[in-house]
Picture 1 (cartoon, helix red, strand yellow):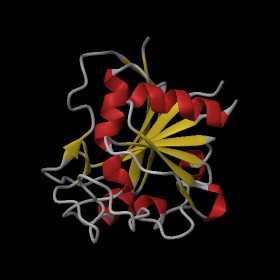
Picture 2 (cartoon, one colour):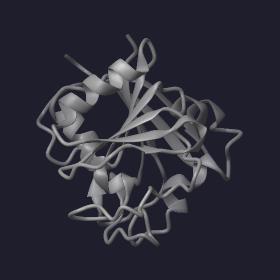
Picture 3 (cartoon, rainbow, N blue to C red):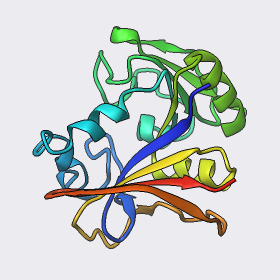
Picture 4 (spheres, rainbow, N blue to C red):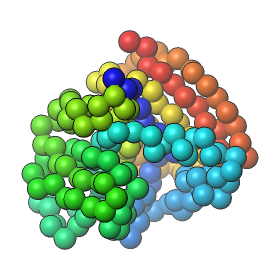
Length: 198
């Protein structure tokens, strides 16, 4: 069985997204290149980390990461990523509102899970087989997995910016010890890999 991991780009003050998310602004009222520019502007220096993000056999995400829709589903909304999302595997979206699966191009199918993070993880593990499961985010979902002891590896990509407000990694997570597995700095980002102690 593979591990359960998460990759999050965060500001130096720990925020992984800004405030006021909307259809036009998936990361809220911030310049998203501050958090994610390292993946595109300096991808040569960060190739190993970018490639590691896409190795999972299944993905879990929160409803806010899937889209800005609140309450009952807008059946037209199919995610931020167009017809061919980058996941290319089954994606399990945590939500309180049922919805039929959405089959996309490239092997991505969005499944909507209404019975909690534990059940989403069971379904993702079954879909992934021997491969890893990625908890893609957002930060609230990653915090939920950390709080429940369901994450094996947290890969933080710390960017040299201060956002001042937003949704912060570790908010609501109880006190716990993390082992630092690795740290690597490049001009645009510092990659830190933590493994929660069991």
